[in-house]
Image (cartoon, rainbow, N blue to C red; front, side, top):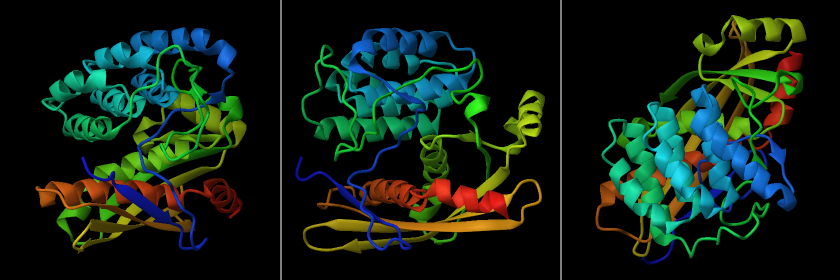
Length: 321
């Protein structure tokens, strides 16, 4: 398979923060002790199958992917047939992160899904599994790690009926706004979905942040909670500023730069700006168009995480204005 792709991310404001690897990650909530693994496993499985809110299922799927426990594989494979495409995409991503190559057959079937997002995530997970080492045995307790495998600390989801973050822990409400491409490149246009997805993922891992995909997702019950708790509400918009491809004899690299803007909501007054850049690289492959697209997605993912690495401080400053 050659060398695995490497993604380097730098925050221009911090001049050299490195992200060891890139992957799409969500999931929220509490660090768990190894002694409670069996109980938490049952909770996750029950929530994935029975939750009435698709957002809970999405969070649960990503939490399963972070566990490194192959016992979740058949349940995530079943979630590939969920009626909601967001759940199917989350399950496809989680199967790749889980590291169990037995999921390859199910992921290949998911490449024929009606949703482009599901197909893309299935392809990325297949690539990840083909390059992955042997999976962790189910009996092994999950480990909390931020090492080079790109996983966040092991988490368990204890969902509410409607979302994974209880209102009494929310400090900031973020509404995702316009996402655009200013790079004027084919790769830039193609990674708009990745940019939005990673913005949400990077925000979700910060405590006290509740994210809504759009203003329309905030219903009357949410509004009452926001008003009663006097929570600051901000809008986050994102741009792909630049996509730069470079080809050398031994590797192909794609550099991505993103800019994120914090605005008041609904007034849309400027409250803050964050930027990040990252480069994805790997040895040349036969299909160069697909390779460039894949590297652009990785670079954008890392650039977003770089830009939002200091999100708590940025949100605090924005809320004061």
